Length: 85
Image 1 (tube, rainbow, N blue to C red):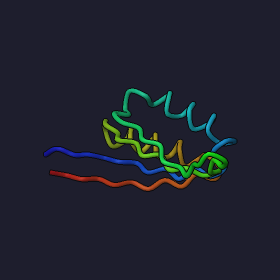
Image 2: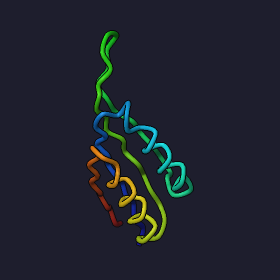
Image 3: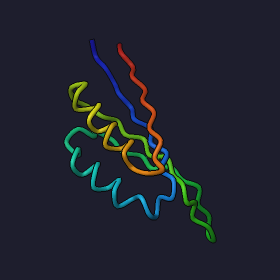
Image 4: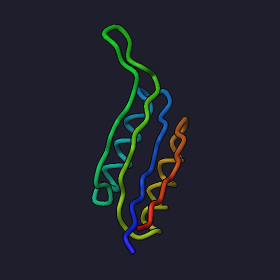
């Protein structure tokens, strides 16, 4: 059975928290297939919050370790979607 796991991360105060986020995803980089960043931006304003979607692979324990590291970031909210087919 195949499985796709997506971690959604709401990163608040992303200007301040993005260095911690980058450090974590670099440490778990081999387990991340795709990364998509979504935030509101215009010519004059850059949103302080952003959503990042991570398409991840690996054993459940490895994915849980990444998820727990992300949850440790102050102001981060993590949600997980798992699709089995």
